[in-house]
Length: 241
Ligand SMILES: NC(=O)c1ccc[n+]([C@@H]2O[C@H](COP(=O)([O-])OP(=O)(O)OC[C@H]3O[C@@H](n4cnc5c(N)ncnc54)[C@H](OP(=O)(O)O)[C@@H]3O)[C@@H](O)[C@H]2O)c1
Image (tube, rainbow, N blue to C red; front, side, top):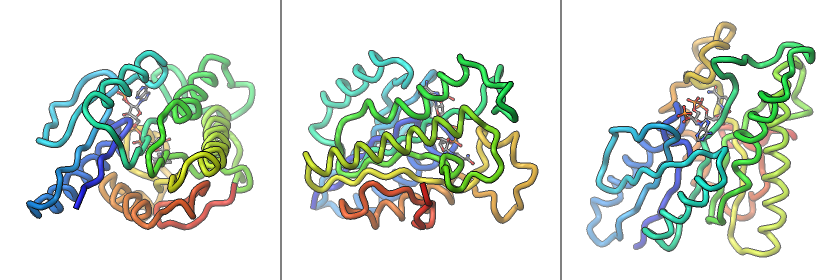
């Protein structure tokens, strides 16, 4: 039996790293079966290569705001393997040392808005076609679920990501077989991205990265081309656009 190869984009973030760890655990269990060809897990880092190693884990440098860097990363991976089965994009931006999410329109700054669009929306559209292509989006990217307003750059960029992935699912359904493109809401997860905004989140609604990663991968396990074009949460429930 052949094992899957995985690419986790943003493998150093809170959720990305937990997904890498969960995949390592799963593939180590499967590899105790000696008839099975070994799985490979490729994970990208942005600035510093983590010292986190495993024999079938391969770290690749990738800055998703730099097209040359993306092309180089894809070329590096293609030198090592002929196919990737699952791509999971865990890169995202909500705040930086200089910018917090906007509470009101007057706080909107072009530079920060474009940075959100580049990191959150555009990066996912620059990839190759695997069997499953999941991008971590956010429930706040849902237009019909927007009751609180605010967070202009993040909300707009996640809504744009959702539209981009929906478009891609339609294009790939026509041109490729058995490809599933999904956008996913990971829950509210205890990472540096959410940490300034956890004040009103009840303990039971704040997930550990490990819990969210396990749930997201379980949802992806159940996905096939029939579910392509979906927007789902960590429990597999559909989220309205
Ligand atoms: N945490 C939550 O509650 C929550 C809720 C809803 C949705 N999400 C979404 O889940 C995803 C993961 O979030 P997280 O909570 O794990 O956040 P995180 O810990 O901040 O991870 C974000 C990752 O994105 C990477 N990144 C940012 N800019 C990059 C660039 N230009 N090139 C390459 N990598 C870049 C970061 O790397 P560096 O740090 O090295 O730049 C980091 O690995 C995001 O899409 C986020 O919007 C999270």
